[in-house]
Image (cartoon, rainbow, N blue to C red; front, side, top):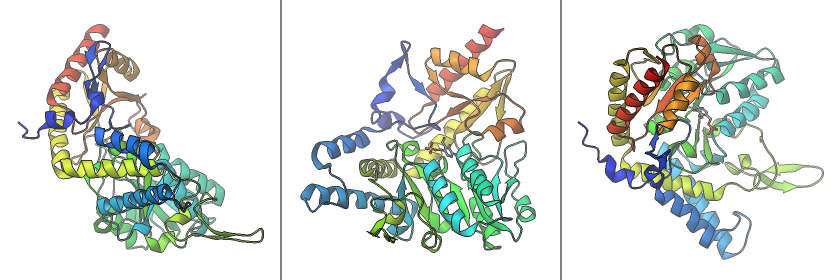
Length: 406
Ligand code: PLP
């Protein structure tokens, strides 16, 4: 059994004490969003109570303090992902915004009629649709790297898909539906051998611990709310060599250097991509979340989550009629499953009434669901504050669902 002191860390998350329908909450929807530790909530309230002022613009004390907190947060992110420079760390509203930023700003400069963009078959819609729109706008073609029936990407096929027209490869670090951890370093090595940059959707992968220099990715996108931080804040890491040649995405406010009615010049990196008033309080909350996660221990937390995953997988497979969707050898703690003859929505609704929060449907990755010819799955996505007892609660609840439908 695990030596991870989960009860100690659960105390940091007040929401885990609540009940739903008179039953203690089992929160297994961490892939959609994670819960927030008290220290993150405290940072946000401290900021509003004692520092709040718009950044980068004021000559007064509060504005100076706000700006310092915001730039300190950037340094915390830089260090967490081991980016070379803070100028390569852009604050956005989340993964979706980060991918849209690259699809537009990179696409405007580097993608032309007849070019190709490669995405994988297991992408979240947020890493498909921005590329699809880019391709439509430019007259380019979207190509798809497939996965096999275990949910493993067919990385060998990447060589075949790449042509002299390929301009970028976009792939998830971890699939939000299958749980597959993709071999990013291998994908990057193949793409780079053809001088093609790689964008990694790290919405689910950031929790695994990421070193952008070691992975040698060109872009890495993630959301604060999926790593114990607030909503409305996210990050785009980009290599300076690409960012400096890319055109701005949104315009106005902080991204401006000078404006006349004849011509506007843009601010330096990273501000060139931070239009308007940034979510500086969200950034401070994210920094606290990353520091907190580091204090738990990224490796220790993921090792414990992996124990939970193994336990849950064994328990679920022992239930007659359960089929797990996504059986890659390398998986994050995300389990999608279907129950024979029972619609995922019905399963999810009953599990909810029994106090177990899961997600049902296509998880914003419809091509994955189509691959398996399903109408959706039930997804339990775990975090380090979950317990083995909670998995037992899920198993009991599934047995109840089966009884009700038998
Ligand atoms: N990519 C993946 C793999 C995701 O799981 C999600 C959210 O579930 C997103 C992108 C979109 O993230 P956000 O809604 O925070 O922009």
